Amino acid sequence: MKYLCSICGKEHEEWPAIAWTSPTSYNELTDVEKNTCGELSEDYCIIRYPDQTDYFIRAVLIQDVTDNCQNLDYGVWVSLSEKSFEDYRQRHNTHEDREATYFGYLNTIPPEYDFINGIKTNVVVSNGINRPEVIPHQSDQDQIPFIQDYFNGITTQEALNRIKQFDSK
Ligand SMILES: [Zn+2]
Image 1 (cartoon, rainbow, N blue to C red):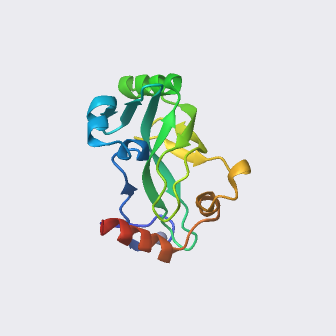
Image 2: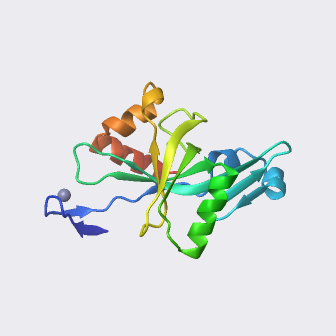
């Protein structure tokens, strides 16, 4: 799909979002576990382990691309506390005032990086957008390559490689 760019005034080919339909923690369950303790929809996921229950929502992470007008959009999953999860679900379902920020752990990492459980983020819900935006915390995580790239940006070549890699799966 082409669109007229509001930044440079030229026409660009719109990049597809790279999106995952379930959290990594869910993908790691066996088929039996998915059926017995997993609950998955487009926007929510709940996993009921014997000793704890984990709550996930689908969100968007925007990767800055330094030498391009476009950014690379990722459809990722974050885990929230039960309280935040219920609060988000209520706002999401009732379409009432949706401005909110939650603390969450990133549960999806692009395959170009090693998966690390426990990357801390803010999950920002704004009125008028479909899915909340995930913004990783910087300070204590700045040795993690994924966090470095998030804040420093990636190149167009790297973005195109990632889209190509993802398409071929
Ligand atoms: Zn442009």
